[in-house]
Image (cartoon, rainbow, N blue to C red; front, top):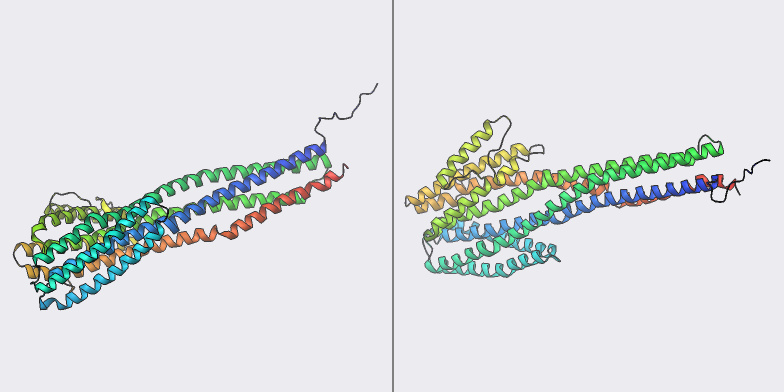
Length: 473
């Protein structure tokens, strides 16, 4: 007696197997597409946060600090000039610079206000600056008026004018500058956190994308083989096309994620870290410049202003030393050691040390070395100012401090400022280029193209098996 060959109701018939494998392929394709979208969207979001939001805010806050510091330096210089007719040109130029910095500070503050919306800590810091800036400007205006009325000699402002300026500079150093620095630091912290998070996500996401892509290709190959065995056909062109499309798409997604990661490294680690360090260095340098003028303007507080100058010098190039003389010696040794080392080892910390250890772009090394040279010269100029003051040659000290002729302190400070601007420009250009590259690679066109590609792959997969399933109807 012959046994029945009929399949049992729950067995894997050919149509059922083909449908199951087709569903597996569709699910694998959708999963791979979803992972690719998540990974690339995360890269784009991270770049947006760093490149268009928090990093520019941190730099703008550093610019606000710079503008405020230079406003106070110019206010001190106006008191230094006094009514001495030899400084008529200096008074006019100083007044003009003060107004320029005031306008710049107002502009930076307006943009900081817009950027801080929704951030309680940022809003509080910005409001501190807003509330205090008007009072500061009023005190400076009062100091200038009292000075004009007193017709005081150079370097010896009237007691009333000096008292008003003390109130102004104390307000600036104790409230305004710390608030501006807090905005910059808070945004810089967010940049660091987002950068670390996005890089970790990209590293893991690329492996997930590769795994999902391989799973989709494996499912498509299995379906192709099943159709070949069950229907005695060598190749299903539509499925072959989908398989090739999947391989290309996964490879493209993996490459784009890698490119986005490299652009993120260039934008943040290579460029932004230097931009923020140098922007803060420029701001601190201008505050140091103000300390020199404060030192000459207010002999009663000279020791305190010298201490703050020394502290800021250490933040620029930290070499140790409890006095300016010790700092000079150690700075000279550190600079000589750095330049004698064939590997360019940087034996000091601070903003300049951070930059010199992060040389990554063409021309940056030479530009950074010029900053170090100009900074070293500016320190030597400062000692000359103090020596003249100690010797009682006050007017010569004021002239040397505020003079713009080659070899005078203000001229050398201008060279330092220009050198800092030059290195910032190199890094800023590279930062913007890396961000723009990611914007182009991961723009809206990619999302639309990816969606169309996934839809085409899904449709082709379904169309590939429909003719075979019809054979069982």
